[in-house]
Length: 450
Image (cartoon, rainbow, N blue to C red; front, side, top):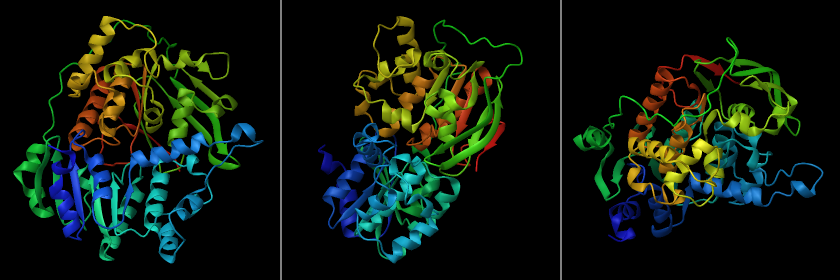
């Protein structure tokens, strides 16, 4: 079936009717490709906001960064400049800055914004273009709980003004009240098209989102060096830790210790420094060396190598996904988790390959093992990188919004896998999520940042 013909029903619906609709489906069903096609093929000017576009803008900012030729960090385009590139500031936009609590972001460089903060900016930029139709691909991903409520209210208000909304979603609980029609997709095409109330009540919806069974035991990695700490010693210890950018304080005076077997959820609004905190742990943040941070009993900046730390950590985040840009297969991506590398640069063992294949089978990606990682959808890539983080059963598993981009089935699967790892292994879990419903029973400690 030709690419355009596969979703003709949706394109025709969007052109023919002005009411808001939502598109849900599995990872790999082509939802994001459909969003691009709707922007290009439907009548009238359509503005598109997506994670892929967001990351492309950040890549452009990094490419144009002139910090090496300046006496200070190059801030690049500010949020205000980026929005004004879409169109002039209007009273509507000014009101939007207040309702989305983002006025304090306008004069900051967009490359320094968190995923959720930049998502707000992208939506404002799209509205500045005065589109006939606004297509939002996973608009809630990366937003904190308050921002999710604010965005839902905004979408309902926009729909009342006559702006047509097309929401491309993974989660059933993100369907806004303004949505009047739902399309459900799998890799073959449209499997359900119905008014919202009928769609939610249908047997097709219930069958579609039925969760996969998980094995009783997770794959055992090949023998490798295990972390040994003195009795009672913490995995992580931070004393009076502070981080700031260009005079702007992110957080200060942080005292925090994580002991083996203590699973933590890290909470807080967009921009409070959750990802920055995790980067201090992994050693990916330069200010770790100006702070009192000990990881695995090693004080950072005491002469250790980054590999002394990373060999005991599994890590997945938006930054990891953006930075994993090498041309390699899905299988090699998972295997690279044993070697803490971006891509594979030395021969791996048969045991490592067998373990990686077991993880791909659990996540129903074994049929895509030989495909290039970048040929997969955003959600499928996230699943592969989660497998990469888990494959070696690390002493510390850092999961920064791991369910971002995942469909309903895969989200439930990953949450159950995290709980399985937390209860049936020696791995300690640090977990960031803005979704209250993404509860993991084994996580009983919470660090709330302001």
